[in-house]
Each structure stands twice: as structure tokens, then as C-alpha cells.
Length: 124
Image 1: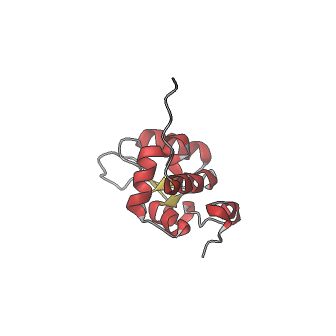
Image 2: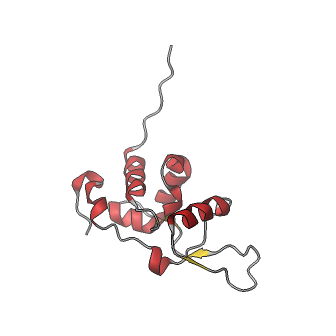
């Protein structure tokens, strides 16, 4: 007897689809993804990424202040450096000395590549 895999909630599928379309070297904030989808908010997107984001480029969905995901800084940093994502040096005296994302340069607005997501709806 085979065990059924629970179906992914539709909202989660849509969030993960957007994450998959963010180009290497670019990021979207949790709020950007929610705005793009036209529903939910940063917390809902964060929850989806925490529960289901391991199979997509999770490091491309980020906090709006550019601080790297707590507990995953080194893994994310490796991805950012490999992809050439713009970073800013850690502030002087910062305990962890971990760079932040340069949100002004790294942030992606969704562009044409993501227009195929979200059931063909245009981003407004």
C-alpha cells in the first residue's frame, strides 16, 4: 500500500513558482513576492518558504533590509557569491561580519521572465 504525498497548497505552489523565476544574481523580498501574486503578505510568503522552499532557490527570496536568513547565512552567502549577487560589507563592529545584500542593486522587479507565472496574469 503506497502512502499518498499531501498536495501542496495552491498559494504555496504560486510562491514557489515565483521564486523559481527570479534570475541568478537577483532577489525579491517576501513582500515583493506577495505583491506580485496580489495576495498574502510577507509573513505568508516567509511561511511558505520556510515549509516548502528547500526545492527552489530559497536564497533569492529575502528580507527587505538585506540581512541574510538567520541560520543559513553561510549557505546563502555561497550562493550569492557564485551567482554574483550584489553585496554590501558588514557594518564596522558587526558581531558576525556577514555582508548584507545590496538591495538597491540586487532587487528584481519581476520583469518579463516572470510573466508566465501566476496563471498568466500581468503584474500591476
